Image (tube, helix red, strand yellow):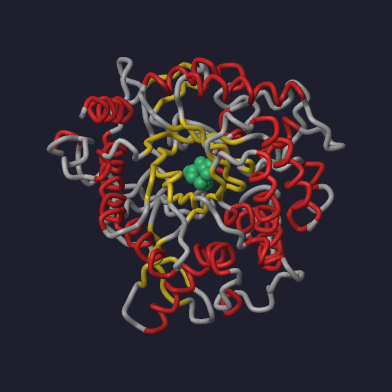
Length: 471
Ligand code: GCO
């Protein structure tokens, strides 16, 4: 969940220091996380780590265009080099495997695998084939996201997600990738966080392509979800053995007071962050409360669209980061009311693991057809420094322990959660915040590209080793 630049930035010191935790990371013995079939992995995304943006025929994406515009990204950072993963992928895969991580979630860069005429780019396809083959050789479960925001610029030039045709181009792209990679992908996710693509990209302009109009946001969302629905049958036909799903970021909104107005505001916050996406996917209809929040922004929906969008899912990926405290804005919406005295991360996001548990148990009661869930992203940013070759990321260790405990509580409450992916495997390009915000469990020195395993990753590896040794 990459929120906009207005995030509260009064980060405070962590609530619990490493040496005060009985055991800094390992879950209690009765935790569901000791189940060997509970997948533990790490996640990344193409534009955030690959670099090599002009190599082997890769076309510009909307993020190449956006990050080149002055003022759009902190410090003028771009994904031009990032973690140079395009050239360092073998060592990165070996590093992932050395940590004992069982799953890896990556994304494909659409502009790298198709040219402007929609024809395959063999060099780009070969990169992903080599990467996935090595992951399979290492016994890693592979979760592949088709769209993690790097739309080819030539499609944006024709309207991008405001153009219904882009949904059909996406289905063509899904067809190519599922034919080329069938057998090496355990789970396909069509989209990552359509909320960010639609709202930050077309609603408030804080992300690429930088447009700002409520009607644009709802129409872009509709075409994104339509793209998802059109791609599902294609993925099923080309790669029947794999799981198919989508990844949604979710937001916990709590009311600043018990007043009816503030309670309504918290409800509308969660409609805008959660039901806007989950209702079409799981109920086949948009939440009407959304149009109370944004009057007159109903998207153009054609016959059959909602049926296409709400096709059954094998899994739902959930990305969770923080809670937002809200009050009524006095009109028909909500406004943030940042709480004092709470623990926050480098992003200014409040550490609030109960929000993950409560949202998941809430979804279980709201959606009777809730598919199996993977926590496809959870993690935090901190200003990590390498000191004497080590990174003691104490707050992240506490954050991960608390959120894995929340996952366990949700599982005990009956939510079918099958795995958890750390965001992120390595520090990377954090969208509008550039490289300042470090989310990795592995530190990246961008001047040398040296990777340094952080203490959090060491402790995750230790837990995974202990779990593997358990009979
Ligand atoms: C997202 C994206 C990631 C972000 C991460 C931290 O969920 O926004 O998937 O690319 O980097 O969430 O904001």
